Image (cartoon, rainbow, N blue to C red; front, side):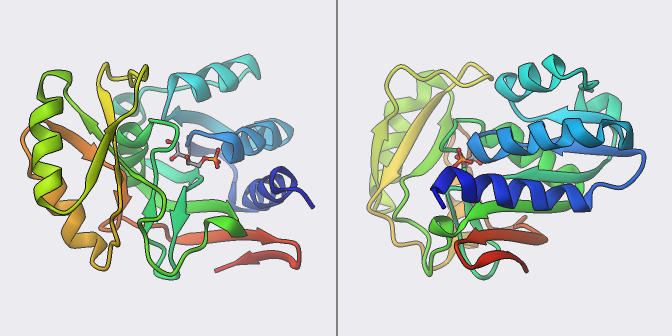
Length: 217
Ligand code: 5RP
């Protein structure tokens, strides 16, 4: 199976978690794109969706879903999203698609977070994937200098503006042995909107597709 077929297998397994009348939080990325397509086949179960990006909003609306603002939705029954890296402790690096801030907000508001990945995303230690940090544009150089002091090697993601109008620094060469501590440290730098470590609010359920099959943990 190709990596894309594995992403699709994980995404379709997540459909089993959708119950009648749910408000469904929808992440961003190629794995989630398969989930959105699958969700269209059980659309009658979905009361409304809450979206983590303009891209996912466009996909959802094209299929006829209602997309509610999180403030109007209040609570979110379930949040389905992918990850760039995930550990056995269900802690993640996210933000490869630059949607980390809205993803983190919906994850925080959701009763249950189901992460859908192919096996290549499973890692022992987070940090091989450069850690995305969303930054207010005028603070970019300042924040980069502070990240260097923490031992990281930040790189400005050129040409990318987030849905919130900010920029992304991708932080290389981190071996993240204490994800919760680093998540907090990065968020304390003035000018950081949020960072792509999902440690304090990890996933509740992880669906991993490999060529051996689909595993739910
Ligand atoms: C977007 C994300 C995605 O979940 C992550 O990048 C995984 O993407 P894909 O499913 O395309 O591999 O965090 O900001």
